[in-house]
Amino acid sequence: MKKVTTSIPALDKIMRVFDYLLECDGATFTQIHQHSGIAKSSTSSLLNGMVAHGLLRQEKDKYYLGLRLYELGNKASEQYDIKKIALPILEEIRDSTGLTCHLGVLEGASPIYLLKLESPQAIVIRSWEGKRLSLHSSGLGKVLIAWLNSEDLDELLPEDQLLPRFTETTITDINILKQELAGIRRRGWGYDNEEDCQGVRCIAVPVFNHQGKVVAALSASGVAFQIPDDKRESLATLMMDASRRLTHLLH
Image (tube, helix red, strand yellow):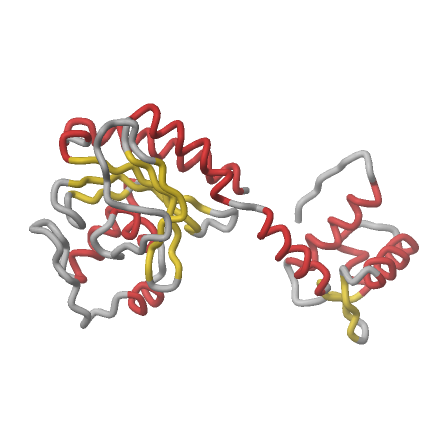
């Protein structure tokens, strides 16, 4: 359980109760008192006040997290816009590489661009905010599914599904794709080697939440001469640094 001490003892005690209840399916007064280290008299008044505010709910002799927290959590999610947080990082990547940069998420069965920053060079990558991508041929799509468990991956891409070919380098075999996803997990980044669009390459990296789940991906795209083979590793290193920074900001 987290132990954070501030200059507001009452708030510290409330957070200790929340932290404990996050780890268990309800708890009695005695259990909360013993695990939180709060005096009995303080525990009683604290729990009564939290129930009154809807932060906890009481059923018989047990206390549970209250629906007020659900309401607050939803509002926090609305105000916590990953696009705003990612924008400065994407701007740095674009400015330092001259590449077109994207932020994307998995929405249902499709990756989708939430944000696009155009390359400052006179090179246009045909993409737009809201564009849906292929799971198996785009760098961003492959990164978004690389950390899924086998069951979730099979639901998105059944083994008997035929993967459409877009270019000569598109991966169309599920087993080869799974090998590619394993490679992405090992090295920490994905690569689209002109698999989605002839002549266009892309480096993509995952963004993780505090639970270690991939919640988004960053990508840098350009034509083949902008991402030559001898610059791929250095660009991947830059992208992974951006991934770590954005992941840290989301925690």
